[in-house]
Image (cartoon, rainbow, N blue to C red; front, side, top):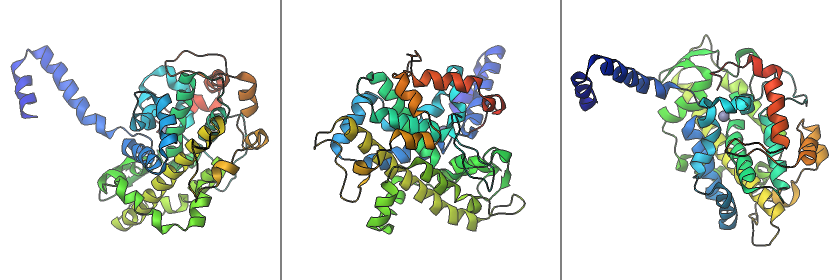
Length: 344
Ligand SMILES: [Zn+2]
């Protein structure tokens, strides 16, 4: 910082103004709110790979190519500054009014997009590598978001984005507090999450690993009462101590479920016995392939997908397929018009 200031002092006034602007920008940047935060998403991906067999890891990396799993997990947040991807803004969350149940609809939200991406990869024979990669990027990110309770929150406060809180570690909005601030302030690391694994029974692990995105969403929503357990925006250390354990557990469960999806989709398309063999405590790969009817029941567009075929690519060129339908629907969608640009 000293050398940067010396540099500023020695350049011409206009350049000084420009340099000061970028200095100010670097001070502002860390405050930007990312879904689950960069650290949270990366932890989910790392936990998934911790529990994956080598064959499935290799199958995933074949499609990610030079991209790391950490970069894959945050790709949907990193592209937020590119307006080409504006149609994905509503895909990071699902809003359901407090006390109400989820009603399947044609809306493209975290639940329907995640289900569609999983379904696509379960039927990926004939898909281009770049389209498989695109769906993997959605899955890597959205499984993380799904396990942040405020991404399954209430429309009235935009998933906690309009709730101001004060706490010993952060003053700002509740959503960012859960996305990022607790994880960073409490320095939650990979080993902290993995250490909780032994708290689960074999039966609980089996249940966690069973693919059911709707059920996973309901479980996240069940945590919302605890998230809002404070008065007048005042949050104390006891709340943080309690909820950092909830966050560690959610990150672990998210990682386990990401691993479960990856095992499942690569086993479906590559049925060799050595590929994607599920561990003994996970029967999901053999049983959790959801028929199209169940996807339709959950409100996704599996039938559209089956009719449409190919997907969008990561380089932004669209082939005819589900993604084009999804993108068009999102652009025309009611929600798209009401989502603030900074909704995380
Ligand atoms: Zn997100």
